[in-house]
Image (cartoon, rainbow, N blue to C red; front, top):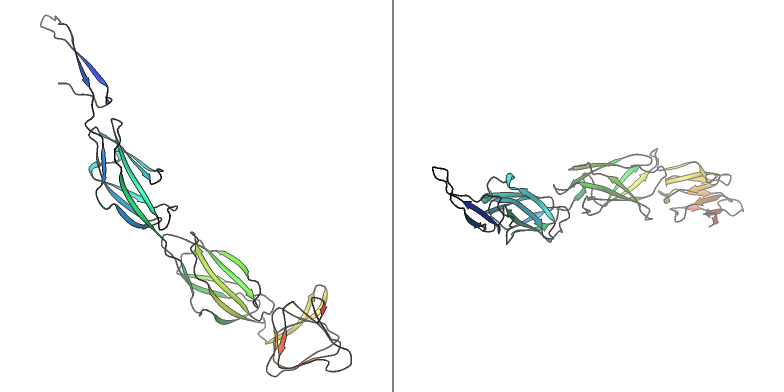
Length: 341
């Protein structure tokens, strides 16, 4: 009996020479027997369980496969829908080809709301591959969008902070378990001016709370709007939340007048809400700092004749009573960017 060796190539021929030897060690003439090597059949592969799944990027899943290779199983080849290689698994790693479970992870570059396809082919020891691939189709779902909310503040709420302080705000946040936080964006808008945007790296944060510390400027600011939103590593962003912050002077007074260097000119800086009668004298130039200087509670500001008052563009002095040219004959001068008002 003769067994065709497993390494024989499909389509090749094996020649066997036969002779008979008797007891006297005499040999007969030889006879040649030729064997043509044929395949027992190409390998086949099929998906035996579910052929579809709905999964997010980075999610894991599995596919149940049945592999048949009459000429000996050699390799499992997995490609995606664009024929990119996903995996190559040798027969030595597959204990039972007739019931094999292939595990996978949906890649980051899979298109959301599109499909990610896995094609399965097998090769045998005769160099043949499956004629029809096993196909598994994944519908790619979006990650859950991150969220952000104030823990102890209402949206659009007014909050008072001291100037030159470093208060903290606690946010309650959420994200998809499969992704990481990326950045917290903070837009600071002073008196409806152009927002200044800063970005905080929060990639190491996991939630459910994030504490943010911000620096309140030293200057008195009548109103600052802080707008917050965060995004994850896939640029999924939260809705914006804001607070309107009333910033008070560092000593807690309603207003303050102190010495200030205005581009080399010594002036008296006025900040805050004036809630009592005060006098501005001609011997001291004054500077209205950022924000609105308010005169409140029936207070009167007496401006001596010849008094110079500087102000930033867009700033104003408003209130209950402002006495101009209270005494004397010289007109007072109010300058804004070195222009007389």
